[in-house]
Image 1 (cartoon, rainbow, N blue to C red):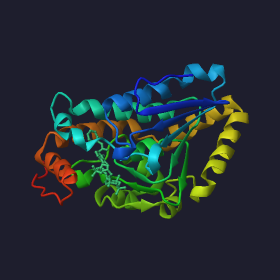
Image 2 (image 1 turned 90 degrees about the vertical axis):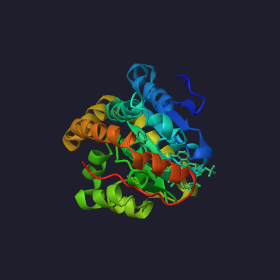
Image 3 (image 1 turned 45 degrees about the vertical axis):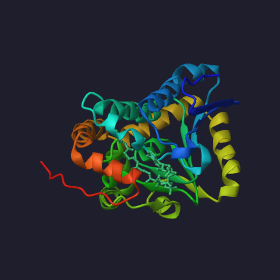
Length: 267
Ligand SMILES: CC(C)(COP(=O)(O)OP(=O)(O)OC[C@H]1O[C@@H](n2cnc3c(N)ncnc32)[C@H](O)[C@@H]1OP(=O)(O)O)[C@@H](O)C(=O)NCCC(=O)NCCSC(=O)/C=C1/CC=CC=CO1
């Protein structure tokens, strides 16, 4: 049984499936660098565990939400120049790890999925949503830009116009619309979630592991040709934004539950 060093991750193994649950429900499963790293380490271990029979990884969130993205309670620390790149790197490494894992990854989204939670969920090979799920690239609401490869992952699924709507307007995209745009693989009623998940896990458990691994790698290579460049562009832009006024104001305004007053100019 793989162990997580972070108590905010619940790790369960059952008959070839590793299930990892983000368990910080009081903040809608907000993440920070240590949590991103702990999750990334678990995903990275899949290459060794496949020989022991692991055939699929399931990512889900406790308490209804998948994740609300990076923890805005620590905005002041994130904005320190020495720290600014570290959380971005941890998120990028995690997303890359999900995409490169030799076993399929299934994300289960049954409520809010926001900020960097979106590229983490969408990096999975199957995104199973309930009708209560929604996706929100909330970054610009707090003076940031999408990261975690979101600019490439979203555009690969939804096209430029819808990507701009999600990234610039930070609109919530509910599960039915997410299905129309190809953001999710399947939408089910909450009551049917576990049986739908069992079906998907069962398909991977009894499927041809080598063929599945090759297929996943080939589809990702063909559809995410811009990913590495996107990681680099997002990192360069985000580091500057994290240390600027608008992020400090955006994060404070979120915590104070008021509208932000942004003042930074481009360039
Ligand atoms: C849309 C929401 C995710 C969910 O809305 P809702 O269900 O109505 O829940 P709330 O009432 O808003 O939240 C419940 C409590 O959780 C706290 N909380 C929620 N999200 C966060 C968070 N990300 N960080 C800290 N705390 C959070 C919220 O304050 C409530 O607490 P109280 O009960 O004490 O009031 C909605 O919650 C939402 O929009 N959340 C924020 C989304 C967001 O902006 N995420 C961060 C984007 S930035 C990012 O993900 C990535 C980076 C990149 C690298 C470095 C640095 C920063 O960001």
